Image 1 (cartoon, rainbow, N blue to C red):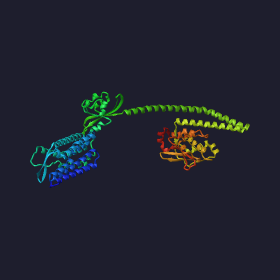
Image 2: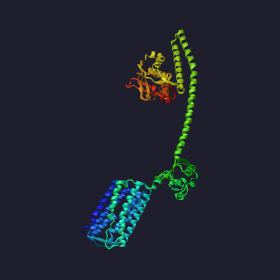
Image 3: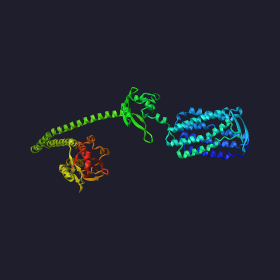
Image 4: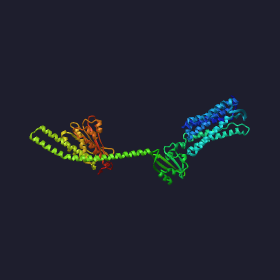
Length: 611
């Protein structure tokens, strides 16, 4: 290869370097297919500029033709890569199927092959001679028909790309408009130079040959691309075409001008109204909304509004929510209206199902409340009807036991009489529990600060016989924390818990009772026994009435702890059973009552009067 000094080498090498920097910057920051295409485009421009620099530096025909072929590797794909980048950027990705991309690749590949095999057919260049131009020799070429075909094809692609960019510019927001101006500037400057060069070939103005100035102007495009990438995130943040957004929305979008004329709509609205876009765009909307009386009224009045409409589409009932919003310019001038339609059929079906379920639940609640009232009334009636006969039985058995003891001293029959008396008293106790259970459910009571020490004294009187028989010991605190409650009911709670501790505690039973303040304005009262303890499952469920009936013994009815829970819950408190810290050292049964400072909260939450 022969070389000659060329004044064009340094500018073209600089162009190549700028293009490579732009390609690298776009590739490193790319997040989209358009960014990839643009990076490959800048790489092609670098190959074009480098190849042309070496072609101009060649001093003989062989050297110049070799670097012409290298240069064309960068030349032929430029229009195609530019169109792909623009289609990606402007949102027309659906046009870039594999088949279309393959078709777009055919012309550059054929053009490159024709350029490399030109000596066989001269389709690209008919002839070429070396002519002095200043200090260097330039190739003056008579181009063949493929060159002109390729030129026309390339300009068509650039014109299509420009139309797409301008169309997107008119619809885009500020950031995207700045990006589009950079892209238009990137392609406009070099191709103005290319137009000057091609016109010289056609019209042959002037005698001195000139080099192709197109690659020299790539420097402006490369600098614009670098600046756009760094300043405006070019190809990182790209506009999404209106068709992609609107046409793929699940909701219907109808756009009207201020006269009520349809200017735009998406396929969902076509389905709702039953008209195609070509049939109704440019026509008044009101004749199309004959079933939408509320919507029509709002549009005629020109007000924002929301409403619902039931329709029958494809023989099925459908429900739509419509929303009218104004379209305004930056100066707040209304230029039209947007109606958004949302299909709420599934929501309506769900609401109807919930409404039906709620009605059924309400009926069940009313039925259960009625049954509870009836059962409570029945319990009262049965309890009162049993109370008197049981009292009579206890009285007669007591007399019979005394007479047997005085008359015959028959120990066997005397034991029978005592068992009958004990059973009758136990039945009386069960009746009392049933009455209390019913009263707790129904009665409205007043809560006040209770005297726990006095309540414990009353409980000890009630359990005097049991305490004497079992020699149980109750350890009481020196001081009780104040709490709110209804004393008669709280006394029943203490009586149940202490009597259970005596029955199921150690022999003899040793019972500790006390109180502890808790967070949330509550006071916890507790009863600790010295029995064998309870399994964890029993501790968790023992206050449940059904569970208590399963584990009841001959010493109880099984409903005492459920009464405790119901009383405490009516006070707004909770109950708990747990084993002591040390295994085999008994259980701790506890309940909470509101502290005096919780007056307002208690009255609101439990629905009872508080003094």
